[in-house]
Amino acid sequence: MADLILALDLPKATEAIALVDRLPGLRWVKLGPILMTREGPDLVRTFLERGLRVFLDLKWHDIPNTVAGAVTAAREMGVSMATVHILGGRAMLEAAVLAAGPELALVGVTVLTSHDESAYAQALGRADISLSAEVERLALVGAEAGLRGVVCSPKEVSLLRRRLGAELYIVVPGIRSSSDPMADQARVATAGEAAHNGATHLVVGRPILASSHPPAALERLMKEAQCTNS
Ligand code: C5P
Image 1: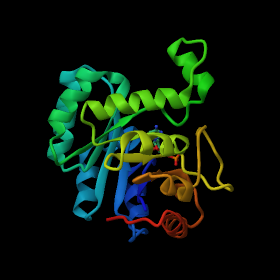
Image 2: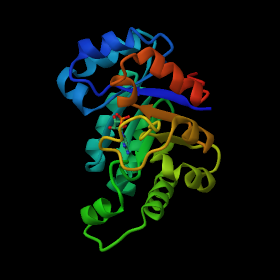
Image 3: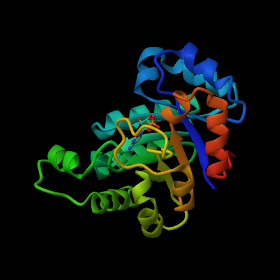
């Protein structure tokens, strides 16, 4: 059982609000850099007023003082979950965890789901790399720093659930059914597989946003993952 989070990667607030208003079963929305850069915190407040939980996915990776300040702003805004890059390092993560307090669930990005092994090795300037070992290493760094959970691809969920124990959140984008286009995602699985393997939150964007009937797509995915959406 997992919660479903709708990734609102749309260009305008009006479009995002109109879509959300067609999805009464929805409990979580994810706002990322596209909408936040265009529309700002007013949109967060709009969704909070509708009783939705907001996941602010800005993937902070900066010096500790700057990230702590951003996390504090998110917490004060009433955001329920936010992301940092675990690659930001131990001092940054600890400062962020302190700023989040118990109210804001801070989750750490391990390796972006758009990376495959060769793209990631190239980005790090290394000859070759095991992605699952890298995801595991980063997840353990995040857990030790006190993060509430981690973000990983559907391919690493089982491994991380075994390594992290039962308590930590495992937040999983890259959800695709066999008929969905992969687009820029490289490491994908279905909602059912990810939930079965131990994901607590499924992040879904284009399979709902690009659907000809978003309410039906949402309902199908929620059933498949036996979503709690509590
Ligand atoms: O459209 P799609 O379902 O691929 O959207 C996935 C969402 O999850 C996007 O908003 C993307 O920014 C986010 N995400 C990701 N990979 C990560 C972390 C977040 O795709 N590692």
